[in-house]
Image (spheres, rainbow, N blue to C red):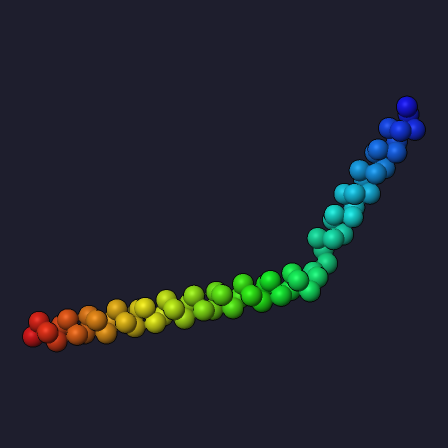
Length: 67
């Protein structure tokens, strides 16, 4: 029974080490995911800027109509 318990403990420790090591190294999929996230963020910023410009133009048109 003691040998089985030691085997379980060693297996758990090795699995924790393996998971920790895997988290430190970025693979190609993780790098690609980060690039996709950055691209989406840039696109969102561009859409937000375009929305602000449209809103400003709408305000100018509204002011011109009021005059």
